[in-house]
Image (tube, rainbow, N blue to C red; front, side, top):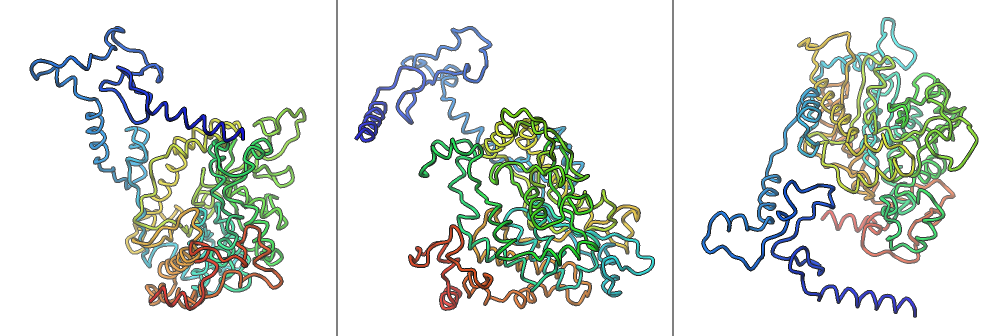
Length: 580
């Protein structure tokens, strides 16, 4: 009864506000109405008027100049001028940036925002690229990692970009390289964010070729809200109190960080360890000859951090997935920052006291652990820099965003709220909040794309490069390819992303020039349409059932013909009808 009275009182008050007459000057109380001359409100911005207080008094709306002239023009509504400036700003063309030098000149010297720039991936794939040549030679020699031919001192690194669910493109690229016989030509594998998961399955090379991609187009969509739940997003930006979810007040006090939008526990604990288990024994044996390097971001050292077995960061499946967790930790939507214990920190992660960044509230002990770690995209979204720093002479860089798409954009207010809450308020890292709000991570990514554009044009026949420098060969979806969203959950869209990634790797890196250009045809043979005909739960291990998955829709109650029915309830007849 009390709740009904409060709602009625609120509605009555709102009605009175809407019906109230507008004051003579300033904004009216009613929503959407304003007087003819809104009073200036400089105080709310911390500004002071340059003229006397009398100059701030708006003119009387009843006084109209006798004859049109400057006085009438000055009385024109400010709103019109604002709209005119707004149209001019919108029509302003973006500055196309083609070199790294131009990028930093526009950002740091000219003061342009990334929203005013256009940085587009534009890769070439010549047959006589230095990296393509050494791959072709190693494939012909059938050499293996750790068993190269005499005189072959080159170090070829394979690096995978992440990007959330865009990692399905990287998974397709990995299968394309395996199918082309290129994986054994690589000496070391690097992975950033979701690329670290792809890299682990690449090193293991276990089971069927589609064991890794099945995680993307079967296991993750099957998880539903257990993996990605956008209902928690309001809490992530600091608006959890207004969330319509039940028990929201209880969660506000029970959890300092709130539930994550993207649940890495489902991916790394449920999928990698149970549903599509990574064979760690097989991985560990292969890792000795073709090591996996996981790249994360050090939030105190302000640089990328490489995690591997040689540095003592992992020696078991639990430790490996913990390192992946650190690399995949998207700020704000995947939970708190990761701190590796003293043993796992090894020799590559700086060890700092717990109290140095405010994680233990009110604690008095000074135990040490690794510095807080976050997603690799903060400092090294495409892990070619670490590869070069650690001695790689040739790098294959697998990108997950297609060519022809601008990789920079304007920062939204929601992003700024997300970063300031997560870094400044929750983790006491204001310097990292400034780094993200000022989009320095996107500047790094734009620089990566521009460098890879330039590196892709190296040709042995032209000699347009320095032999002493490392050689980077990018793999990217061709111009006109559809981009996969970071939080995409559509099974068909993810499956097509895997196919396109396979075709790109096949066309751009196959050692046989006659095979290049057939990537799309071979991709449909390797990943036939019949894969989508079966239900996603059919790929579960024996003894595991669909209803056992947390967050899965009940089989007893058929969902509406929306996204879940398209993902989990389609059959062959429906597929044929839709294609027809």
